[in-house]
Image (cartoon, rainbow, N blue to C red; front, side, top):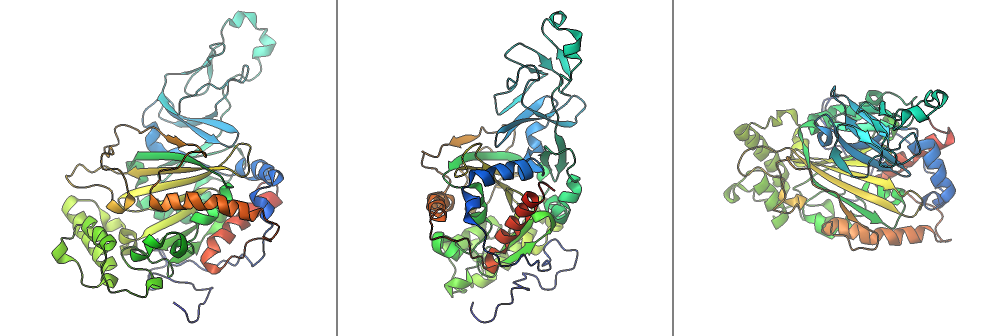
Length: 456
């Protein structure tokens, strides 16, 4: 730490990475130094502009493909004021429909997950096939033909699948999904998310704007102050920050190495020893120095891959040891690891700009080998079902409840309401972002493009 810092170069974890490597350092993108109006974090007017010109215009991550593996399976995707049905039809195609009956507006589905042969309205029993076509109008003979000449099928949305994830858009003119996600596809595809299943899903309500949540999770600058426990096991200062087109970004966080802020790169600690054990190393194989542990984890996982036939050759060394925290605009962060994927969504409250839903999904690829399980540092309960045969229910935590999300996330949940209150102060004139917060500026720059152009 200290000394000269070149913000145009930042830190690259592998300075010799090939140009087409998934972890190669990206060219610097200059998003300026302006101080943004803090009203964006609490203004009802700004919230409306976001809905009209961003949420309804872009692609949104609805959920994993594994939640609709068979025809008739469906799940609900709740985004702001909208409820959207994601389903698989009898031909195996994935469809997305607004969760509303065209007759009188009743919502068709109330359960978050399920499997049906058709969607039937509980109000007047109109029914619709999995393709969205109306296949029954109750007492059809009592309707004048001119009424039923109007479209009375379910209203579909644009839907696409990429890297095992389902995306939807309310904008029929939205750019192709493959173009939207192009900067990230090589990295995301390598994790084979389509072979994973949800093993944990918690949705908690936080007393802050959804962008306050994004801002907190898109940087490591706060770790030393808010999460001092992390300093022993991860490098939060010399992380690699990358910005991509379409508001995408990531930070590659080295694991199994103490933070530069500690000043002690030699002493081993319990956290690093757990990571070494998870990588298949026995205690007598542990390195003497902590600064050698990250490489030891990489070698250990390659050895484990050969033993269990995990095909880890598709990963770079950094992917085996580090966290690839990847931002998908507008509201997603994927924590990518060989063992599991964390999907974090920052979902806007339907009416209150100073509340949001923090949606945390853990996905895991079951390997039928004794002892293969998610890394211990992930903090999952020991009795959790890892097979993927049963999709766990969503655990809902209201803003009035004390969340139980694990130590680090609990610390964030406790802090953010105070950040939100401070943002409202007359003494706060807008954020002053440093280069460790470059992802924040990049995200807000993309958001402002949508609002300035009334949707892209």
